[in-house]
Length: 178
Image 1 (cartoon, rainbow, N blue to C red):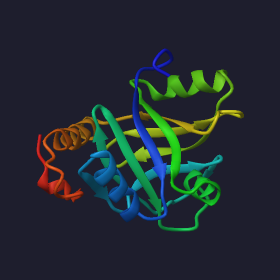
Image 2 (cartoon, rainbow, N blue to C red):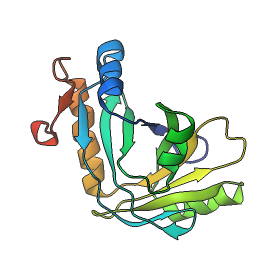
Image 3 (cartoon, rainbow, N blue to C red):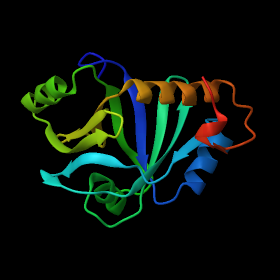
Image 4 (cartoon, helix red, strand yellow):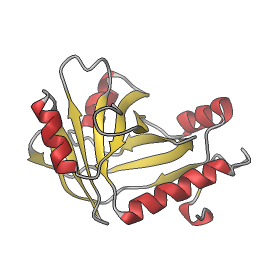
C-alpha cells in the first residue's frame, strides 16, 4: 500500500462490543489507552451508491504509529460494518491510508479494479471512502482525508499512548492533551 499512496495508518476491526476487545488489546498487547467516540455524526454517508445514516461508535488507540480502530455499529442499517460482523466477528475489517487528494486516490483505485462501497464526510470537513476488490485476501481498504482537527485529535491520542502507564484502559478525550 505504501507504494500506491503512503503508509498504512490504521487497522480497523469491527466488533459487536468494546469491552472484550479493549481488554485484549490493553492487557495482552499493551496497546492503549482507548478513546471512545460515541455515535459519530457524519454527513453525506453512502453505502453501495445509496444515501444512508449509520449509527456507530469507534474506540481508538495507537500501537506506535499505527492506529487501532474498533468499530461498533448500533443499528441494523445495511453497511460494510454489518456485512462484516455478520460474516466474521471481531476480525480485521480494513486497512487505512491517509490521503492529500481523496477524489484522485478513489479514481486511481477504481481504475485498478476497486469498487467504492461506502464513504462520507465528517462534520469538520474530513472525508473517507471504503474500497473493495474481488479476491482482496480478507480486508477492505479505507482512504481518509483528514481535516486539521482530525489530525490534531489523532496526534493527541497517539501521544496519550506514548505516555500511557497501563492503568486506565479507557480514557475520555478531555483527559488527553497534545
